[in-house]
Image 1 (cartoon, protein in one colour):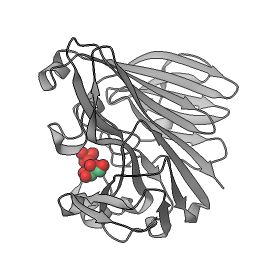
Image 2: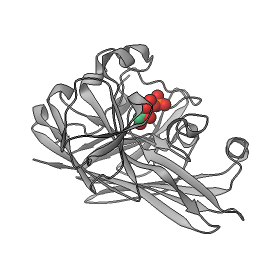
Image 3: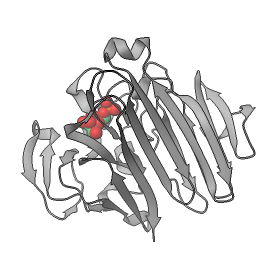
Image 4: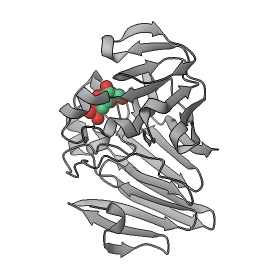
Length: 291
Ligand code: TA6
């Protein structure tokens, strides 16, 4: 199914419509500067394409749209923990229903804001009160920010990630710089390792880089472009490609689809962020193309 061709169930403005696929509501943006789609299930950006550019974000052709599962590809919101720190893996934000709270547009692009607050389901998993706001600023660049507020009477702490899947021409020709040298290797039980200045791929790669530069550069050589990923509010950058064997084992990824994706994630890993009642923290990622 081409999600971009779904029929409209509600037009919010000239550029913004709501459509639905298998019970999942999608905010669809068709604007002279940008095309994008955002699922309310998960508060999850699905596609992003500035005018005249190839898609920047990868979405699995086998992605499952099921309100009990996370969507494979796009930008999953991992919150309030990263990975298997607790269950479910990567937290519950990516399988929760978010609310559209604001949308604005002008000649330059579109801004969409979604919110997620604690409810009976979230408190059964994680017993805290919170208010989360996701803001998507979409123009020639994409700026995604997740602002978390402690609305409880007790402090709590959180981790997570904006787990962006990038669309690349060929993983064998991709190089990444700016991720720093030290990483925890998740394929070796989190062993602390030192890498070089330039990361290339020829096997499963699952790393938590502990001292990334503010901007990480993904050289998508066969698309003749460099994707600049500028993160803030993070303390790590996770880089992931499952390679062939793991892709084959995953029901929501085509067997060879690892060749055209790589994740570079704005991550709160260790330490997690402590928020006192009323306090706020923002995790963000800005994605731009340089030619
Ligand atoms: O961010 C990397 C990672 O944590 C990997 O370990 C890998 O499992 C990936 O995320 C996908 O996780 P998911 O729960 O979406 O299958």
